[in-house]
Amino acid sequence: MPLPPPLTLTLSLFLLIAAAFATEIPRFREAPAFRNGGNCAIAGSPGSTIHIAMTLDTTYLRGSIAAIFSVLRHSTCPENIAFHFLTSSRHFQDLNRTITTTFPSLSVSLLHFDPLLVRGKISTSIRRALDQPLNYARIYLAELLPPSVSRVIYLDSDLIVVDDVANLWNINLGGHVLGAPEYCHANFTSYFTPKFWTTSELSKTFLKREKIPCYFNTGVMVIDVNKWRKGGYTSKLEHWMRLQKRHRIYQLGSLPPFLLVFGGEVQKIEHRWNQHGLGGDNIRGLCRDLHPGPVSLLHWSGKGKPWLRIDSNRPCPLDSLWAPYDLLYSPPSSSAAVLLSDG
Image (cartoon, rainbow, N blue to C red; front, side, top):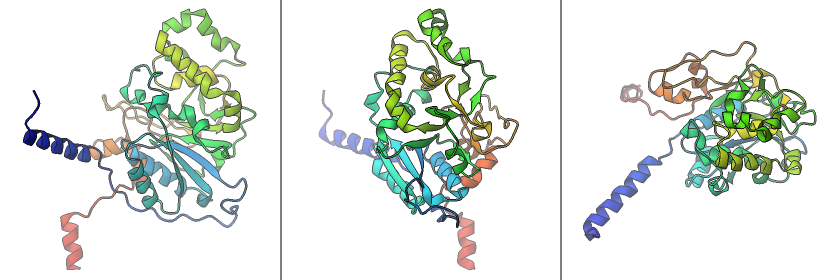
């Protein structure tokens, strides 16, 4: 039975208001204008640009803003950095406006990622957040980036960079398609199901590699985009996603396909460029320490995000290192407003 017209109108209005509040994008303070040092190449000249790709959505926007700010703050040549944001959000224009008003002098491009590219290829994992289509956008970087981009740094949105990103950009990939910090102490077998290891046609995948594969985190990668395109690596990753959909051979989102395609064939980068796992476990309130050694990048991979823990007054000690890069706008308190008006 259809609803009476007045009730229908009231319900529609309620849904519109609820949607508006649910998708409200927070305000951020404008970042300082960062300028090149005296020894920088002229911005826009051949070979001068450092290309960085990130995903962008409303859920992780606060983390993305902090990550961008950290990159620019520690760069010797910030005007030579170009950011490429992959987004599937319906709030494309609002996100673009937020980025450009927070960083007015930043070179920015927003690239639309169509979720339909992966919806039929994603199977549920042990964490719901890992099943979002945008989590798989990094697989399609080579297709989404302009043809002129031949190398890119991919960064997750829950990290900060505390070193000059040019030092990461300039690493020698040694003929490899991809470079990333590797962690050989991790239990590599745990990322795949028993069915994978007991099926010889599948498990022999790793026997063909030149060395025993090590785990690497896909939140920080340097990618030779030209080699990726020529080698058809997007199709290779999609192959494993389709196989997973049929046979359930791994557990954890978009990471296992990267391990299957690139494991054992990654150019090793110093661990300082991905001090990952700082998100710990939000359910148990577990806080993590840094790995031994120097630090160039801190990565809050895991369930706990620093901005959520800070807002809930339950921060971990290392969250204090993220806080200085938080540009979320906080209106002055009423007491501060009184003091200002009296002054």
